[in-house]
Length: 233
Image (cartoon, rainbow, N blue to C red):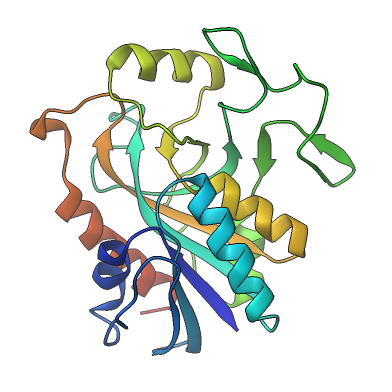
């Protein structure tokens, strides 16, 4: 059975409401729903941050060993609003955790302490995991829009609140999205040998707090439309 992961209850309710009655879930809660075009699926609310995401999915997979794949659905910030404007849908093809490793006061060197996080296809994972959205979607019987861009993404524990921080991360990693859960979820699926698909809609410009650079409601509506497309509707 496929699991749909959301960081927050608000994201879960927005995505599911057009398709089925959303379950009443708090952080760490999960329930089974019936989705048109898919049938039974489990829904999990992880809570925000890499720690909550990894812990919640790990506990869930231990309790639900019949899980056949994981889909992460949520909003994210865009480093380049021209390439990825507000409300755009994007599919990460990699997740980088820029905060792991040996920190020199400016940035973290993932190889600095000499201990890799995992192995993927025979290569050591230092701070970046590869994701194959098309292969994962096919394995789970889901439908991707060819027009959705396939892009690199960053996972952070501390969201960028200044243009300087955003510029530093972009210059170092050249990612187009910033989120708070993707790397942890992808790592859990790698460890468990499960297909993993991440679908993000753009809610804001990374590093900017003024309202003009935000459209959370629009991103949530786009998330609902994206889930409907995944299900072939």
